[in-house]
Image (spheres, helix red, strand yellow):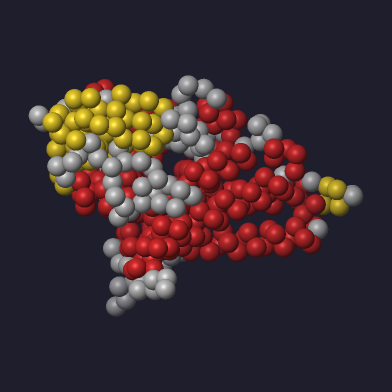
Length: 362
């Protein structure tokens, strides 16, 4: 009997049903004009959307076991959710709390915190810069007399977190209530996923476990499933660009009928198809535990350039309207650019892949 998961890297009926449900909810609660308006406000996170995703669908606890109040699902289902969130550039802390922080907690096993995350009564964030790659050196704070002191920068979604998971110089990972730290917003290109500086000045924390393996596991899952978000971003950009070029006319012809533009779109379609394969492979590898490091490195070595290329093509091919603030393409360009350096840039993942498959540069 084959041990290969069915239906391989294709989407199962359950995954397609989940996609449809998430897309319907986002269509009703996350329109582009609303996202743009939020980026111009002092509250870029859509808390009501987060509650809808968590309360009505239980998505905050997808990766958390059922006995702790979660759904007991796998990274495959989580990847489908992230695809749809990427398609909508939804300003919710899903990747940071329901994936990265959750994975760190699963490695340590604090059941009470996991139960809180599953019910979405608590939002958590791993206090590691968004740019840090799996396996890279992780900045940490120092412990003096049992209290935490130091500063961590580039922490995504820290502004909306209730609990921060903080690595310390004793090798431990500590849970610190956000009320006990100072969170200062930092300038971010992608306003739908803001980053912040976290300052701890004698904050008390609860030791959860060893930071090393927990952070590595969390960042690997973040990098692997980020590819599905990048896929969603790319797919929306391609679909909307094709739709626009079918409607737009020039010289009394559909713009999409010009051969040069057909070639550009065909190339982009091939890139997005390749990204879908890489992202699905990474999600499946995270779910099964087979060749996970290689699958994640392959996905992130490729995903960033595809998403950025899709955004650049969409911006150009939408012509003048693509340059306006009212059109949402700029949201996708910013998300694509920010994602391209999140959890490690492509070059970092290529170097890691070269080590994994013993093909180092001469």
